Amino acid sequence: MGVFVKRDPVVLIIVAMVVALMLVFGFNMARKPTPTEAASAALVNHPAPNFTLQSLDGHPVQLTDYRGRAVVLNFWATWCAPCKIEMPWFVELQKKYAPQGLQLIGVAMDDASPKDIADFAKEMGVNYPILVGKEAVGQAYGGIPFMPETFYIDRSGKIIDSVFGLKSKGEIEENMKKIVATVASPQTSK
Amino acid sequence: MIRSIALTKTALCVMLLLTSVFAQDTLGGRKLPSVTLIPPGVADISKGKSNIVNLDFQVGPGFHINSNKPSAEYMIPTVLRLDPPTDITVGKINYPAGEEMSFPFAPNEKLSVYSGRFTVGVTVRPLSGVLPGKYEFRGQMRYQACDNAACYPPKQLPVQFEVKVLKAPPPHRKNPPQSPNVHN
Image (cartoon, rainbow over all chains, first blue to last red; front, side, top):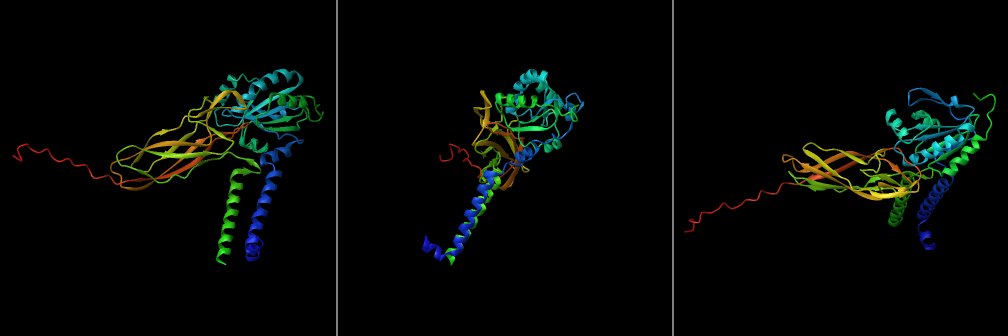
């Protein structure tokens, strides 16, 4: 190897560059979160971006309409199998924690018509409002490049946590308990 | 000197390859679903009859896409759409049966999916008047990918392949029946 290096210093430089590149990529991959995770992480402990979206029956709904309640904002799609798995859990937990001020909100991020989304929600027995999503709202929440994605918002409208992909029912309930336990700040509550 | 240049070129190629691998498969460390068409060779096809052209696709590791006949109505099927060149028609597209798999998010449910490598057979039929030579097909395959915990919005994969219409073999000529009396 020593003889080889002595003969070809150019090769040594190139090999060093390749190794350096691999190290840079490796470090970057290990430490850098995805744009979504980074954007969503930036949202945690900040006020949840407000939006106005149409409900399935055509009424405009704003996030601030629910200020004072503990909000679980779930981005989902009709074609998303993991989303379908967690929906019955949300239905059950909405029933259980609604008296304590919990409010589930589903935002459907697919191209299906409101009627198809409504049919799907009815079939799933959904007992919370479903809103028809818009790309701009998705962007405000980090891009939503995959689903499900769920944001836990406390009673004062602050995002406490953002969760990517399907989690267990136990984890979902724990996150709900955290936001239900929060107290609304008087100036921000409805 | 020549050896040094060759090695330098090799090292540069390796760098390019590494760069493309990292750029394609990851976005800030998270793997993204990828479905690719394995470059098909030019398929030889014959005029005036149906030919099957097989297209091989590869789904990235850790991901799956719904089959052409997903297990639930709400799921988005994998569908290939092609724009054939003039004078060549596209007939039936044969999709493989999906693998019946269950996933951590639905352990009690079997989903019909493609993962790894799968082949789609396209029936093409050059009309009898088509000139021999190469023809290009373009199209798109729509698919929707998931991993073990999340699903990604539907995507369109551009699909492109070539066929070569062969010259028709000379018509087989039968000898005319001979009169039994000819040699008499």
